[in-house]
Image 1 (tube, rainbow, N blue to C red):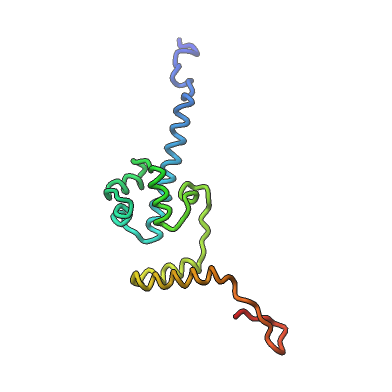
Image 2: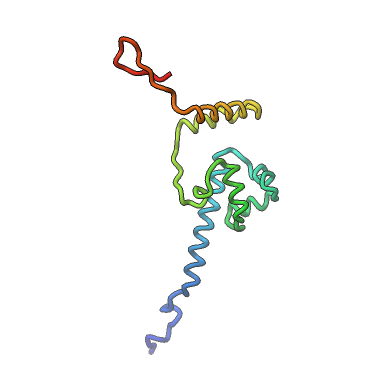
Length: 146
């Protein structure tokens, strides 16, 4: 006959450290997925990211599959390279889909570097200039943006 203590393994809870390690693994895999998604979103290859970070391509592959942890300096470089924030890579900030930004990205992707720099300078100019002033059209109740 078996007693209540005969099968101790099935009744024993996992140690608290195991739960924390499992949670860390889940978060590390989620970070790896976000890094891969961001890289693909901006249209970069693993080799291009590796070159920008000064790492072997295999290291980027290992990061994207969760086999390698990302150093804080690397995370900052990745966020800059991808044009996003560290918070977004860490999952603290949601990605908001913007069709205009997506269209601009697709439109500029085929440009050469000099033309992309021109587009960037123009966008920076617009940011500094602020919104266009509203003017009243004579004989109309509507205002128009110039």
